[in-house]
Length: 365
Ligand SMILES: Cc1cc2nc3c(=O)[nH]c(=O)nc-3n(C[C@H](O)[C@H](O)[C@H](O)COP(=O)(O)O)c2cc1C
Ligand SMILES: O=C(O)C(=O)c1ccccc1
Image (cartoon, rainbow, N blue to C red; front, side, top):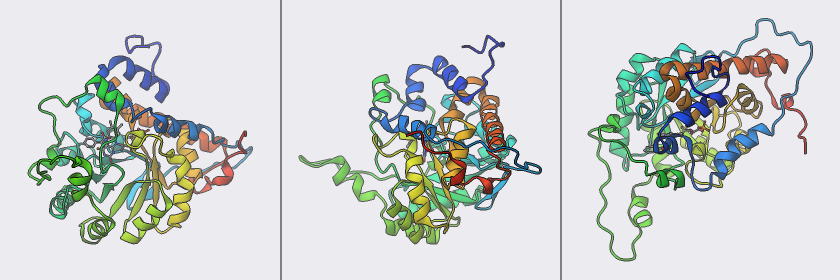
């Protein structure tokens, strides 16, 4: 399939994925599309969602239905946000600002990556629905707080602290394709913030355990950030219910169930399989979001049925951006929204609160 054959327009996110795969250079495709290790978790995210069966219902009253919702103060047309993703201008010059404009046009939210290659003020000027800023722990309290303050000044309304990637996952496909950032592309929003410097290793020392581990955050640092940051802090990358309980105890304003799209610990449980236990552990104290493997509107429905308050979309937005710039990203989001509405209508759900565990049919096994 190619964009030169207008008689075959992309009709689903799968079409966009195929087009993006065909058109991107192998190294960029490896970075954006592939996962860690043998990609077990990347596959499980989608497969475990697909195993859940929406249960059709007949003759329900659908008048006045809506997908609108509020998530931690964000008013959205549907419970959908673009996930934070680094270095989007590698796919199209519109980059993060183009995706923010697309999200805003479609009435969904967006989380800006700390590794955005465009300044946060510019991104928000192009798309005000880009309301949350993601960050990593920057090696110490001062630098992390400085970034939080930059985000507050730029008008973001929440921070998303990613806690599932204290070290990079080992991404075989990226390594073998030789992916490297081209000169000129960098995380501009981190300019001027102190980054940890490591003393040389002596023999027998491990870079990870003897250097990096000394600048990683503990729960006391997370609690400190939640207490002192100028904005509410969600934690992204929670899979274990005990971590979810810790997050609430530390003062997190929300929890995002995620395995980083299968890019960090290969073999980790799929997000959807981890969701119910996290929802139970949080017990309604704060919103629970999830991401990983959402490729159809029915997947959004499946996640909501298992208790998510909203979902984040990662790679499909990259596919749309790579194929047709901001318009492609916008169309990808539109397809998801249309599919969600149709799924709700066919399962007899008028509003998001109608989407419950009972809306899923018996397992085929
Ligand atoms: C190319 C790429 C870059 C990413 N960069 C970040 C990042 O900077 N920060 C972060 O918290 N997560 C990052 N993620 C993870 C996403 O936010 C999200 O958790 C994941 O992509 C969701 O899975 P999905 O791609 O199957 O939808 C990245 C994911 C991809 C694919
Ligand atoms: O690629 C990623 O998934 C990611 O989260 C990241 C982390 C640091 C720098 C760039 C991207």
